[in-house]
Amino acid sequence: MSMMMSCQQYLFVLTSGQLEEAGWLTRAQAGQHRLMCRRCRTFTRNDAMLDQLTMAWRDRLLDPNQSGEASTAGDDRALPSDQDTGSGKL
Image (cartoon, rainbow, N blue to C red; front, side, top):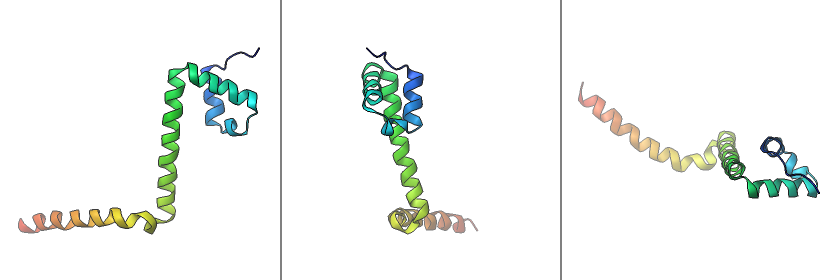
């Protein structure tokens, strides 16, 4: 019978990317640990969200015109009103 992974072992396997390449036994142990440990479940969820955010930022930096058109239109509308209030004081 195999022992349950410790939090340190689980986090290392998860963050190093070895979990996707691991065998069925390691994946089963990681899944068992995640079911039992609330902190590691939360860490896994936060790690996945952080991965999504960094991928979105990377994609936006590589191709700014892809998704930047909609967000820059809102930014452009905010700039003239700031400039208009500044020019009224002169």
